[in-house]
Length: 153
Ligand SMILES: Cc1cc2nc3c(=O)[nH]c(=O)nc-3n(C[C@H](O)[C@H](O)[C@H](O)COP(=O)(O)O)c2cc1C
Image (cartoon, rainbow, N blue to C red):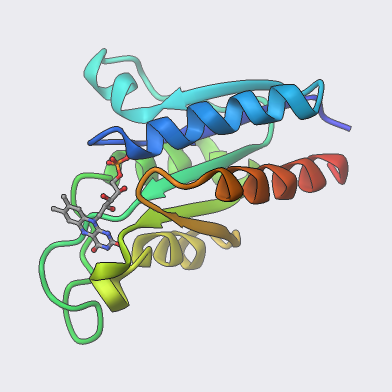
């Protein structure tokens, strides 16, 4: 069993960051996993070069799409692309347990669409989704899924 888990994410307005921080607390309380967070926006901002991860990770991806409706248009990712670049870097995607999408259901067909696109692009599953900052039951549901996946590693 691998004892280290990375939570890799990007957050522009703080919702995903809030979810990842609360999820980290949950995982640390429920297990002896060594949980490390990587905010890809910070790497870019601080000009830290991307690197290969040495343990499994889950990706957390809010949805930002360029207009449209998600059916015949509006499927172009904006603002979150650095997360995809980090996942693609040095085969990091091979260590990805899956992606957790987030967004706002008001966007209908575009709800969490980018997470589905990443799953198709990289060949890992969409593990789950949540709206905005996520509720406590979202944290616990996602946390339990990650603990099950880590137990199988
Ligand atoms: C310009 C803009 C575009 C957005 N597009 C979508 C979208 O296409 N689908 C969706 O589910 N949510 C969409 N959202 C909602 C965000 O995904 C949601 O607010 C998310 O929680 C933001 O995460 P963050 O605070 O970590 O950046 C959009 C929000 C903004 C501001």
